[in-house]
Image (cartoon, rainbow, N blue to C red; front, side):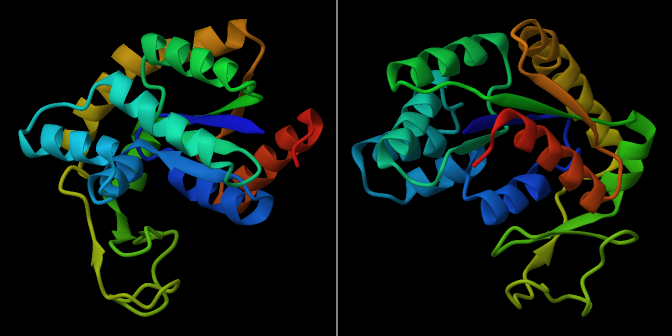
Length: 218
């Protein structure tokens, strides 16, 4: 099973993706994680990614599609969760073509719907573990021990420099301009399934589980 988690920055895509990995054996494909992994892999593709990033240039869609293709060929997991990709209609078409070449398809696009004002409040209190990626929040999910990750014990907890109201508005505008058209695109294909992204984490997980169960998740 292959699914996309769609939603603006801070909607909770990463949190839900990690749950799905653990509970359903799916593999999260985050663009940022794939690029970082490729950069240190020593492969031909990795060397190409490193050269582009070291030059301060943007990684092209073809490169990202190539990284996804390597993951598809690996045979890992029971399917993939696309987190942060596609971001544009052109990328959506490219992903559909790639999956078709490998005899696969998208099974569902989960849209985490949020209210912008509430999202600003959520993100302003967010911090993550720099080692394992676990996400925390000052109000709703603080770490049990201040400055220490509950999951891996790391003390490398940090906040993104752009997790503030001003920067978030810029990121939201970018999302609405480039990524929100995907909502209509996937609705027309009958793949879109909206959930309340501002509900408590457990409630969001139950909504997603219900959708995947209905469409035949492993």
